[in-house]
Length: 364
Image (cartoon, rainbow, N blue to C red; front, side, top):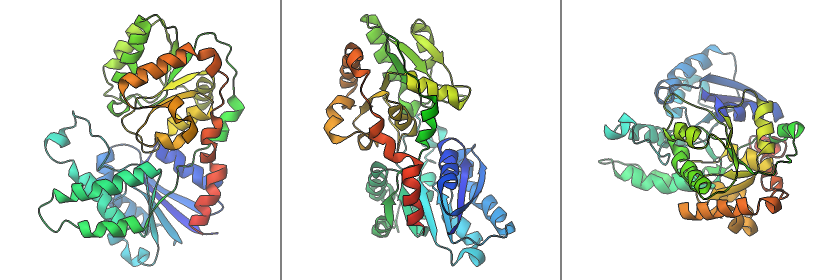
Protein backbone atom coordinates (compact mmCIF):
# COMPACT_ATOMS: atom_id res chain seq x y z
CA UNK A 1 0.00 0.00 0.00
CA UNK A 2 1.29 3.43 -0.97
CA UNK A 3 0.73 6.82 0.60
CA UNK A 4 -0.67 9.18 -2.03
CA UNK A 5 -1.22 12.89 -1.57
CA UNK A 6 -3.89 14.05 -4.03
CA UNK A 7 -3.79 17.81 -4.56
CA UNK A 8 -6.90 19.50 -5.96
CA UNK A 9 -7.05 23.34 -6.04
CA UNK A 10 -10.62 23.28 -7.44
CA UNK A 11 -12.45 20.91 -5.13
CA UNK A 12 -15.98 20.81 -6.49
CA UNK A 13 -18.12 19.09 -9.12
CA UNK A 14 -16.53 16.30 -11.13
CA UNK A 15 -13.08 17.11 -9.70
CA UNK A 16 -14.33 16.45 -6.17
CA UNK A 17 -16.29 13.33 -7.16
CA UNK A 18 -13.21 11.90 -8.88
CA UNK A 19 -10.90 12.57 -5.92
CA UNK A 20 -13.30 11.20 -3.32
CA UNK A 21 -14.22 8.25 -5.54
CA UNK A 22 -10.64 7.14 -5.98
CA UNK A 23 -10.00 7.51 -2.24
CA UNK A 24 -13.12 5.46 -1.46
CA UNK A 25 -12.32 2.55 -3.77
CA UNK A 26 -8.52 2.51 -3.62
CA UNK A 27 -6.36 0.10 -1.66
CA UNK A 28 -3.84 2.90 -1.16
CA UNK A 29 -3.82 5.47 1.63
CA UNK A 30 -5.01 8.60 -0.21
CA UNK A 31 -5.07 11.97 1.52
CA UNK A 32 -6.63 14.97 -0.21
CA UNK A 33 -5.16 18.47 0.00
CA UNK A 34 -7.61 20.92 -1.55
CA UNK A 35 -9.04 24.40 -1.90
CA UNK A 36 -12.67 25.30 -2.52
CA UNK A 37 -13.90 25.13 -6.10
CA UNK A 38 -14.33 28.79 -7.01
CA UNK A 39 -12.34 31.56 -8.72
CA UNK A 40 -10.72 29.10 -11.14
CA UNK A 41 -8.32 31.62 -12.64
CA UNK A 42 -7.04 32.64 -9.24
CA UNK A 43 -6.70 28.98 -8.27
CA UNK A 44 -4.37 28.46 -11.23
CA UNK A 45 -2.32 31.52 -10.22
CA UNK A 46 -2.25 31.44 -6.43
CA UNK A 47 -3.41 27.97 -5.50
CA UNK A 48 0.10 26.52 -5.62
CA UNK A 49 1.39 29.05 -3.08
CA UNK A 50 -1.39 28.38 -0.57
CA UNK A 51 -1.28 24.61 -1.02
CA UNK A 52 2.52 24.58 -0.68
CA UNK A 53 2.18 26.34 2.69
CA UNK A 54 -0.47 23.86 3.81
CA UNK A 55 1.65 20.90 2.69
CA UNK A 56 4.70 22.13 4.61
CA UNK A 57 2.61 22.34 7.79
CA UNK A 58 1.54 18.70 7.44
CA UNK A 59 3.52 15.85 8.91
CA UNK A 60 3.22 13.67 5.82
CA UNK A 61 5.77 12.31 3.38
CA UNK A 62 3.84 10.54 0.60
CA UNK A 63 5.14 7.98 -1.87
CA UNK A 64 3.35 9.82 -4.68
CA UNK A 65 1.97 13.30 -5.23
CA UNK A 66 -0.93 13.33 -7.68
CA UNK A 67 -2.11 16.81 -8.69
CA UNK A 68 -4.78 17.90 -11.14
CA UNK A 69 -4.33 20.30 -14.03
CA UNK A 70 -5.57 23.23 -11.93
CA UNK A 71 -2.33 23.20 -9.90
CA UNK A 72 0.74 25.14 -11.04
CA UNK A 73 2.98 22.15 -10.30
CA UNK A 74 6.26 23.88 -11.13
CA UNK A 75 5.58 26.61 -8.55
CA UNK A 76 4.37 24.10 -5.95
CA UNK A 77 7.52 21.99 -6.31
CA UNK A 78 9.75 25.06 -6.24
CA UNK A 79 8.24 26.15 -2.93
CA UNK A 80 8.47 22.71 -1.36
CA UNK A 81 11.70 21.36 -2.90
CA UNK A 82 13.36 20.44 0.39
CA UNK A 83 10.43 18.08 1.09
CA UNK A 84 9.38 16.98 -2.40
CA UNK A 85 12.62 16.61 -4.35
CA UNK A 86 12.54 12.79 -4.02
CA UNK A 87 8.78 12.30 -4.43
CA UNK A 88 7.47 11.33 -7.90
CA UNK A 89 4.72 13.63 -9.14
CA UNK A 90 1.85 12.76 -11.47
CA UNK A 91 -0.68 15.15 -13.01
CA UNK A 92 -4.22 14.19 -13.92
CA UNK A 93 -5.68 16.36 -16.68
CA UNK A 94 -9.45 16.75 -16.27
CA UNK A 95 -9.27 19.62 -18.78
CA UNK A 96 -6.68 21.98 -20.21
CA UNK A 97 -6.76 25.66 -21.02
CA UNK A 98 -5.17 25.39 -24.47
CA UNK A 99 -7.98 23.53 -26.23
CA UNK A 100 -10.84 24.50 -23.89
CA UNK A 101 -13.18 26.83 -25.84
CA UNK A 102 -13.10 30.29 -24.29
CA UNK A 103 -16.24 32.36 -23.97
CA UNK A 104 -16.42 35.32 -26.35
CA UNK A 105 -17.56 37.45 -23.40
CA UNK A 106 -14.47 36.67 -21.29
CA UNK A 107 -12.39 39.90 -21.10
CA UNK A 108 -9.14 37.93 -20.95
CA UNK A 109 -9.62 36.91 -24.59
CA UNK A 110 -9.91 40.47 -25.92
CA UNK A 111 -7.02 41.58 -23.72
CA UNK A 112 -4.80 38.69 -24.89
CA UNK A 113 -4.45 37.40 -21.35
CA UNK A 114 -5.85 33.93 -22.00
CA UNK A 115 -2.55 32.29 -22.96
CA UNK A 116 -1.11 32.36 -19.47
CA UNK A 117 -3.41 29.58 -18.26
CA UNK A 118 -2.48 27.28 -21.12
CA UNK A 119 1.18 28.00 -20.49
CA UNK A 120 0.76 26.92 -16.87
CA UNK A 121 -0.61 23.61 -18.17
CA UNK A 122 2.52 23.35 -20.35
CA UNK A 123 4.98 23.98 -17.49
CA UNK A 124 2.96 21.66 -15.23
CA UNK A 125 3.32 18.89 -17.82
CA UNK A 126 7.07 19.59 -18.01
CA UNK A 127 7.46 19.41 -14.24
CA UNK A 128 5.51 16.19 -13.77
CA UNK A 129 7.04 12.70 -13.85
CA UNK A 130 3.84 11.15 -15.22
CA UNK A 131 0.86 12.70 -17.02
CA UNK A 132 -2.58 11.14 -17.24
CA UNK A 133 -5.50 12.23 -19.41
CA UNK A 134 -9.13 11.30 -18.80
CA UNK A 135 -9.70 10.32 -22.45
CA UNK A 136 -7.75 9.51 -25.59
CA UNK A 137 -9.36 12.53 -27.24
CA UNK A 138 -8.03 14.78 -24.49
CA UNK A 139 -4.51 13.41 -24.74
CA UNK A 140 -4.49 13.74 -28.51
CA UNK A 141 -5.98 17.24 -28.66
CA UNK A 142 -3.63 18.65 -26.01
CA UNK A 143 -0.45 17.22 -27.50
CA UNK A 144 -1.44 18.14 -31.05
CA UNK A 145 -2.26 21.72 -30.03
CA UNK A 146 1.02 22.38 -28.21
CA UNK A 147 3.18 23.23 -31.28
CA UNK A 148 0.84 25.96 -32.59
CA UNK A 149 0.27 27.27 -29.06
CA UNK A 150 4.00 27.64 -28.38
CA UNK A 151 4.82 29.09 -31.82
CA UNK A 152 2.98 32.31 -30.99
CA UNK A 153 5.65 33.27 -28.46
CA UNK A 154 8.66 35.36 -29.64
CA UNK A 155 11.56 32.96 -29.03
CA UNK A 156 12.87 30.04 -26.90
CA UNK A 157 9.46 28.48 -27.29
CA UNK A 158 10.23 25.02 -25.91
CA UNK A 159 8.71 23.15 -28.85
CA UNK A 160 11.59 20.67 -28.64
CA UNK A 161 10.29 19.62 -25.22
CA UNK A 162 6.95 18.32 -26.52
CA UNK A 163 8.29 14.78 -27.22
CA UNK A 164 9.26 14.54 -23.54
CA UNK A 165 5.69 15.37 -22.54
CA UNK A 166 4.29 12.90 -25.03
CA UNK A 167 6.59 10.13 -23.78
CA UNK A 168 5.37 10.36 -20.18
CA UNK A 169 1.67 10.74 -21.10
CA UNK A 170 -0.97 8.05 -20.81
CA UNK A 171 -4.76 7.72 -20.86
CA UNK A 172 -6.38 6.85 -17.53
CA UNK A 173 -10.15 7.08 -17.93
CA UNK A 174 -12.20 9.01 -15.42
CA UNK A 175 -13.55 6.81 -12.66
CA UNK A 176 -17.25 7.26 -11.88
CA UNK A 177 -19.33 5.65 -9.15
CA UNK A 178 -21.90 4.38 -11.63
CA UNK A 179 -23.30 1.57 -9.52
CA UNK A 180 -24.71 4.08 -7.04
CA UNK A 181 -27.41 4.67 -9.66
CA UNK A 182 -28.60 1.06 -9.43
CA UNK A 183 -30.64 1.42 -6.24
CA UNK A 184 -32.67 4.25 -7.80
CA UNK A 185 -33.59 2.38 -10.97
CA UNK A 186 -37.04 3.17 -12.33
CA UNK A 187 -39.10 1.76 -15.18
CA UNK A 188 -41.02 4.45 -17.01
CA UNK A 189 -44.37 3.58 -18.57
CA UNK A 190 -44.82 6.95 -20.24
CA UNK A 191 -46.11 6.92 -23.82
CA UNK A 192 -44.38 10.25 -24.51
CA UNK A 193 -40.56 10.24 -24.76
CA UNK A 194 -38.71 12.19 -22.07
CA UNK A 195 -35.68 14.13 -23.36
CA UNK A 196 -32.84 14.95 -20.97
CA UNK A 197 -30.39 17.83 -20.48
CA UNK A 198 -28.10 17.09 -17.52
CA UNK A 199 -25.12 19.39 -18.14
CA UNK A 200 -23.93 22.77 -16.83
CA UNK A 201 -25.98 25.72 -18.08
CA UNK A 202 -23.07 27.32 -19.92
CA UNK A 203 -22.08 28.41 -23.42
CA UNK A 204 -19.65 25.54 -24.02
CA UNK A 205 -22.49 23.03 -23.77
CA UNK A 206 -24.04 24.65 -26.86
CA UNK A 207 -27.58 25.10 -25.51
CA UNK A 208 -28.64 27.22 -28.51
CA UNK A 209 -28.42 24.30 -30.94
CA UNK A 210 -30.07 22.00 -28.41
CA UNK A 211 -33.12 24.18 -27.73
CA UNK A 212 -33.52 25.57 -31.25
CA UNK A 213 -33.77 21.98 -32.51
CA UNK A 214 -36.46 21.24 -29.93
CA UNK A 215 -38.35 24.40 -30.94
CA UNK A 216 -38.27 23.15 -34.53
CA UNK A 217 -39.51 19.68 -33.62
CA UNK A 218 -42.31 21.09 -31.48
CA UNK A 219 -43.41 23.34 -34.34
CA UNK A 220 -43.51 20.27 -36.60
CA UNK A 221 -45.88 18.55 -34.17
CA UNK A 222 -43.59 16.03 -32.46
CA UNK A 223 -44.59 15.11 -28.91
CA UNK A 224 -42.00 14.95 -26.16
CA UNK A 225 -41.33 15.93 -22.58
CA UNK A 226 -38.17 17.65 -21.37
CA UNK A 227 -36.20 17.54 -18.12
CA UNK A 228 -33.51 20.23 -17.82
CA UNK A 229 -31.11 19.43 -14.98
CA UNK A 230 -27.57 20.59 -14.21
CA UNK A 231 -25.74 23.42 -12.48
CA UNK A 232 -26.89 26.98 -13.10
CA UNK A 233 -24.43 29.86 -12.73
CA UNK A 234 -24.71 33.63 -12.51
CA UNK A 235 -24.22 34.09 -16.24
CA UNK A 236 -26.69 31.75 -17.88
CA UNK A 237 -27.21 31.82 -21.67
CA UNK A 238 -30.46 33.62 -22.54
CA UNK A 239 -31.74 30.60 -24.47
CA UNK A 240 -32.64 28.87 -21.19
CA UNK A 241 -35.28 31.46 -20.29
CA UNK A 242 -36.61 31.37 -23.84
CA UNK A 243 -36.85 27.59 -23.62
CA UNK A 244 -38.74 27.85 -20.35
CA UNK A 245 -41.39 29.93 -22.17
CA UNK A 246 -41.50 28.19 -25.56
CA UNK A 247 -41.40 24.66 -24.11
CA UNK A 248 -43.58 25.33 -21.08
CA UNK A 249 -46.00 22.53 -22.01
CA UNK A 250 -43.18 20.01 -22.46
CA UNK A 251 -41.06 21.04 -19.44
CA UNK A 252 -41.38 18.62 -16.51
CA UNK A 253 -38.20 19.72 -14.71
CA UNK A 254 -36.25 22.98 -14.96
CA UNK A 255 -33.31 23.21 -12.58
CA UNK A 256 -30.82 21.16 -10.63
CA UNK A 257 -32.16 18.12 -8.78
CA UNK A 258 -32.31 18.72 -5.03
CA UNK A 259 -30.40 15.55 -4.13
CA UNK A 260 -28.64 12.66 -5.82
CA UNK A 261 -31.63 10.30 -5.50
CA UNK A 262 -33.77 12.76 -7.47
CA UNK A 263 -31.07 13.18 -10.10
CA UNK A 264 -30.71 9.41 -10.49
CA UNK A 265 -34.47 8.93 -10.86
CA UNK A 266 -34.63 11.54 -13.61
CA UNK A 267 -31.85 9.74 -15.50
CA UNK A 268 -33.61 6.38 -15.23
CA UNK A 269 -36.93 7.93 -16.34
CA UNK A 270 -35.40 9.78 -19.29
CA UNK A 271 -35.64 8.09 -22.69
CA UNK A 272 -33.42 10.13 -25.03
CA UNK A 273 -30.19 12.05 -24.36
CA UNK A 274 -29.67 14.64 -27.12
CA UNK A 275 -26.20 16.19 -26.71
CA UNK A 276 -24.88 19.25 -28.57
CA UNK A 277 -21.87 20.10 -26.37
CA UNK A 278 -18.84 21.87 -27.83
CA UNK A 279 -16.64 20.94 -24.88
CA UNK A 280 -16.17 17.67 -23.04
CA UNK A 281 -12.81 16.12 -22.40
CA UNK A 282 -14.63 13.12 -20.94
CA UNK A 283 -18.32 13.86 -20.36
CA UNK A 284 -19.30 12.46 -16.98
CA UNK A 285 -22.93 13.59 -17.18
CA UNK A 286 -23.25 11.89 -20.58
CA UNK A 287 -21.74 8.64 -19.26
CA UNK A 288 -24.09 8.68 -16.26
CA UNK A 289 -27.16 9.02 -18.49
CA UNK A 290 -25.97 6.27 -20.86
CA UNK A 291 -25.44 4.00 -17.85
CA UNK A 292 -29.09 4.59 -16.93
CA UNK A 293 -30.11 3.31 -20.39
CA UNK A 294 -30.91 6.75 -21.79
CA UNK A 295 -30.64 6.52 -25.60
CA UNK A 296 -27.70 8.81 -26.57
CA UNK A 297 -27.52 11.10 -29.59
CA UNK A 298 -23.99 12.52 -29.52
CA UNK A 299 -21.77 14.65 -31.76
CA UNK A 300 -19.01 12.74 -33.52
CA UNK A 301 -16.36 14.87 -31.83
CA UNK A 302 -14.62 15.33 -28.49
CA UNK A 303 -14.55 12.21 -26.29
CA UNK A 304 -18.00 10.91 -27.21
CA UNK A 305 -16.99 8.30 -29.82
CA UNK A 306 -15.06 6.56 -27.01
CA UNK A 307 -18.35 5.94 -25.18
CA UNK A 308 -20.11 4.26 -28.12
CA UNK A 309 -19.24 0.81 -29.55
CA UNK A 310 -17.97 1.18 -33.12
CA UNK A 311 -20.73 -1.01 -34.50
CA UNK A 312 -23.32 1.34 -32.94
CA UNK A 313 -21.77 4.61 -34.17
CA UNK A 314 -24.26 5.26 -36.98
CA UNK A 315 -27.17 4.99 -34.56
CA UNK A 316 -25.80 7.37 -31.94
CA UNK A 317 -23.25 9.76 -33.49
CA UNK A 318 -23.83 12.72 -35.82
CA UNK A 319 -21.60 15.25 -37.62
CA UNK A 320 -23.67 18.39 -38.32
CA UNK A 321 -26.52 20.27 -36.65
CA UNK A 322 -28.85 19.08 -39.40
CA UNK A 323 -27.73 15.50 -38.77
CA UNK A 324 -28.55 16.07 -35.10
CA UNK A 325 -32.06 17.18 -36.03
CA UNK A 326 -32.68 14.13 -38.21
CA UNK A 327 -31.23 11.67 -35.69
CA UNK A 328 -33.34 13.13 -32.88
CA UNK A 329 -36.44 13.14 -35.09
CA UNK A 330 -35.80 9.50 -35.94
CA UNK A 331 -35.40 8.64 -32.26
CA UNK A 332 -38.75 10.28 -31.49
CA UNK A 333 -40.44 8.40 -34.31
CA UNK A 334 -38.91 5.09 -33.19
CA UNK A 335 -39.50 5.74 -29.50
CA UNK A 336 -41.45 2.52 -28.77
CA UNK A 337 -38.62 0.40 -30.24
CA UNK A 338 -35.74 2.42 -28.77
CA UNK A 339 -37.30 2.30 -25.31
CA UNK A 340 -36.08 -1.26 -24.80
CA UNK A 341 -32.51 -0.66 -25.99
CA UNK A 342 -29.98 -1.24 -23.19
CA UNK A 343 -26.98 1.11 -23.34
CA UNK A 344 -25.55 0.47 -19.88
CA UNK A 345 -22.94 -1.93 -21.25
CA UNK A 346 -21.47 0.90 -23.36
CA UNK A 347 -20.00 2.63 -20.31
CA UNK A 348 -20.08 0.30 -17.30
CA UNK A 349 -16.30 -0.16 -17.54
CA UNK A 350 -15.89 3.40 -16.22
CA UNK A 351 -17.23 2.33 -12.82
CA UNK A 352 -14.70 2.71 -10.00
CA UNK A 353 -14.95 -1.00 -9.16
CA UNK A 354 -13.35 -1.69 -12.52
CA UNK A 355 -11.02 1.31 -12.76
CA UNK A 356 -9.77 1.60 -9.15
CA UNK A 357 -7.59 -1.55 -9.44
CA UNK A 358 -6.09 -0.11 -12.64
CA UNK A 359 -5.39 3.21 -10.90
CA UNK A 360 -3.93 1.39 -7.91
CA UNK A 361 -1.66 -0.78 -10.04
CA UNK A 362 -0.43 2.31 -11.88
CA UNK A 363 0.80 3.84 -8.61
CA UNK A 364 1.91 0.62 -6.94
